Length: 298
Image 1 (cartoon, rainbow, N blue to C red):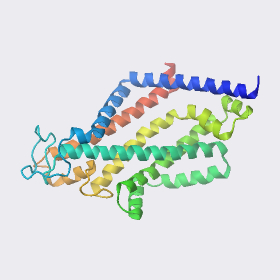
Image 2 (image 1 turned 30 degrees about the vertical axis):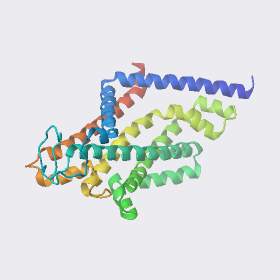
Image 3 (image 1 turned 45 degrees about the vertical axis):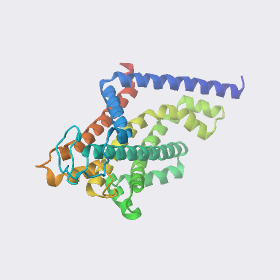
Image 4 (image 1 turned 120 degrees about the vertical axis):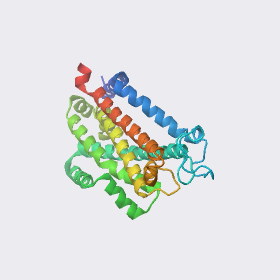
């Protein structure tokens, strides 16, 4: 049997094993009540955010001359604010901004950090030392402080908030991916691929990544939750987001002078944030339980 045939058989076996593992993980995830609630809640949130221009029939910026601080009604389900703007529309558009910005930025940070972590964890040497010292330096600063620094340097704007979330996400994924690589690089299937002459990128991204990726999915859910909090915090402080652009944190901040007169003003953006973060944390716990070897054996 030639080396090429053995390599193809090994690749086919690993691919079949990966599909079986992912299917089994998804079944355990959806059978877990926490996972089912998290997936269902996130689907509702995603549909509401994507369909915000359709569901919210009022313009989030338009002002109604006779609708100052109106309580929730059929025409204004979340009431109106002090500038006579519909809060239902502003909440949905703020949710869309926070979710899209966090998801895209965390995904970019996850790709960069994972590739860097896998690479330095496999090759080791001076590259590993340099990259991990940079990671340790970034981990010394809270995400919100990094966002403040980047917005101070680059200026305001949603794209700069996205850059801040990317920079915040990279160190966590790099460290976790490196730890996964260190645990997998000396296993038998890696040694077999090396003996068959597989290149380093093929070993890392075709073989090792299959077993090393699941724990990173937990980190994705947690990082998105942190990203949403960063966007909300910046909106609360009025940084990075223009005044007319709806944001959940900005709505909470704007409601402070009207807490006694308009209870609905802070309640709805706060409830949306709480529900979103709850679903993301439940999803992270459910994924962790689904990939746990102890849960699999039981």
